[in-house]
Amino acid sequence: MTPAGARSLHRLTSEPERTVAIYLHGGSPDEPVAAARVLSRASGFAGALAGEGRPRPAAVAAICLYPGLNLHAAWLGALWAGYVPTMIAPPSPRMEPAKYAAGFRAMAGHLGADAWVLDDAAAGLLGAAAGDLGRRVLVAEAVDDAAWAGRTFSDTGDLDAIAVLQHSSGTTGLQKAIGLTSRQILAHEDAYARALDMSARDTVVSWLPLYHDMGFVACFLMPLLRGMRLVEMSPFDWVRQPLRLLDAIQQYSGTLCWLPNFAFAFLAGARERAGDRGPWDLSPIRAWTNSSAPVMASSVARFLEAYADSGVTRNQLTASYAMAENVYAVTQSQPGAFREARVDREAFSRHVLQPDPGEAGLALVSNGPALETTEVRIVTPEGADLPEGRGGEILLRGACRFVGYVGRPDLTAAAIDGGWYHTGDLGALLDGELFVTGRAKDLVIVQGRNFYPGDLEAAAAEIPGVAPGRVAAFGVSDEATGTEKLVILFERDSGSDDPESAIALRLRAHIAQTFNCAAGEVRAVPPRWLVKSTSGKVARADNRAKYLAHVH
Image 1 (cartoon, rainbow, N blue to C red):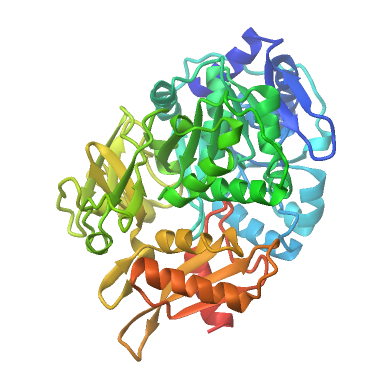
Image 2: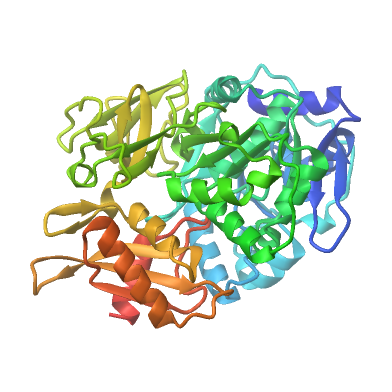
């Protein structure tokens, strides 16, 4: 067994009565689960997975389950049985079954897993595709608890062997599998726990999916390794009842909560629509961590205003820059050190962070300093180092940097150069802190001026009637002008009665006023039209392709 897995299981056996997790189920009572119960269920999965003999070295077990005890136990059971576990996104209730099955087949072929764990619903939805996965397919509901002693919890295994797989978010392309070793995981755990002063006294409250790095590492691995209690709800339940997250924080005295940027705006909007609902007692929270690239000042401001009466303060806010290729966190600010900087908009379009403290300045949010395990550089397209205050591509290296993409040496060679990982993200350093400004490949260039889609999307989300997190901005070639045309697509907020044309007109005027840029097209699209990655990020390349194929 890998050392990281052994440490997780040791902690469970040493504290059998400790409440490891509380699962929140929509319409059903909350389900607190003790360590002994998790261990018993994990033992059943381990025995079932080992039933056909010892797996080959680095054999992968892919786990496709909804949040809950089975997901946690199957992952631990796979480790226990000697597999390298990885989590796969289960079917979304809103996704067409045929589309999910097609994507699942592609992922299965790409991953080449040796064993699969599905639930009845996924197995039934996949139909014949499940039969193509091979003979070692377990249906979670058919796995019984069992005492299985086929493998000990010895932590003397190879620190540099692949322990787990996680996946890049797939925002701009096919998901890529990333192998992480125990050495990388444990180094990250130690450094990240110090950055946020995490301990077994903390309670993590989360709706994040566990098949991406933010949920998997911050809200699954860290609680397992540090002994923190986890209060978990399904992302599907959260979308339907976002304020349930706040109920849970109040009920269980949550102290840590990680959220992507759009969730802060979404929660603010939910409070506005809820009228008299609340206030809550959210004062126990030590850190609301906005883990986005970039973090949007407007979303944070809306959240602070909406929940000021519930005890949310600026001192609770933190920010992180994170990615699966570095286990999770690259940077992290501490509670009480949340920092914004206002910069000149025109200089910013030329990749220069020039201070402009006035109201006309563009508000940027720091993602914090690098973890002690990680070094960060900012470079030009040619690879030359840039000084503080100058924007360029973010490169990183350190103890937590991944070795490479599994089965994709071509992608690995393109991403890692001289020990430095080329993130493809843009940012700048100021006073030792990283300000992430966007992705290089997502830049919109209009008449020689650079615009970051994230900034445009954040501005669009400020317009009443625009659904939070449901905006996509991108550029398309305009042969008539010899430059790119800015296209902004948005979905209307379900609570708005305004005509789409009126919302679009307000949005267009706001973009022109804020960025001194005329949008070539601002268009409303039907609900759920916009494509997002499985981690909930706007898939700009996919939306651009969809626009060109079906709208343009």
